[in-house]
Image (tube, rainbow over all chains, first blue to last red; front, top):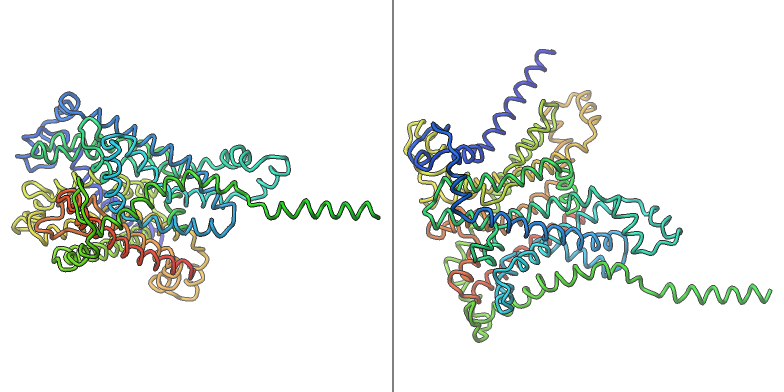
Length: 276
Length: 302
């Protein structure tokens, strides 16, 4: 019985290990390819490199706008995330704690907005921002990222605030705190896991976003990384070396960020989905 | 006596207006959100509706043409093709990612070594940028040294041109969408599985229920609600997907992998026909609204 159980456990472990490797194979091959020379990528059919080389990374570093674009991605992501977590916190608190027909209707609208096709917003916004001379600015992209991620962030905050007992606020109001003070001094300090979860999702959304950045950032100097990488696929007739090296480096911030906050991420994604 | 009477009166007068007073705090808190949503969602929605009944390019909008754009669309084979592909993409995307997610969630819910590691390793496709996944996959299914074609060659078959043929491209796009989506299903289903009381399984075991019966009558009903919500969310995400398709095939070859979003994008930003582009977006929105309504109905039932 015991050996049977142990065998079962081993089989389960091995199958999960194989599945994990298979699932990550496109990423693994990509990382390995980034360490091969361009000629080896195109001629050799073996997976492992015959000659380890960092020339792709060197090329990226010296001959392309990679770091500029990485910087752009950081700017857009940082401000998009910051604005989103601040503005959504207020709204999430409002629909979590106060009751009125208007507020119920509003939270309904927020749910529906998650289905809003971005392309529908992009067409008029492109024309509007162009007339305002705001194409090719990070401001526009930050504004769009913040807003488009708001409904999701607000619902996540609502979930966290709902779980905080109202007795805390009652006590605060007896002690003479105004609503605003209660929010800043009592609620926000104990909601840091909620803030972290919202921040992770905003970060990933902004860092990974392609469509909006592609429409609004046409200048190579201003492009974010996802748009910049795509240029390697077209302009240079698919330069696999630089392409795989750039893609590998783009994942690094995601992984670093993710490993730090993994716990919140998994809890948050579950909460977000359950709440709708 | 009279003193207490006046006290009562003053109390009641002081309470009454206070009750009528609206608490403005929540509305102040909502103000920034409302301003942004009006600017970035409502304004484009209304303008988009108006554009969809006008002619013109991105540079210069022309006359109102009534429903002409919609009529033109309904007569275009390209539109019906895109509509059909949107549903095909959604159906297989949802079914595939749900099945894989469910199986992996059930496995991860068991007592297994390295559970935390596997959970993270299997999440990777979901958290990395779409561009990065497409770079990885483009090489995997490439025609020369792609791993998939090497395997096919190893099995003694001719290499497949995945992105050059219509069926190959449809298959690839759906496969990669499933790959990018299953971790979401896995994580949410796993979270829901962990809330099931294990006593139920013990009781079922004592009653002589096998593994399948336990799964059928305990596990499935417990995750039914979350499954419905996840599937409807995923349908909406698949419907709205732009990155996977655009970065892999740009809708080709010959419109084979063109969904409504790609169609709207092409008409607006490549062909500069804002009227048709907006009309396609509005139709997408209507379809998505129907899906969203279904989702809310299911949620209310719970």
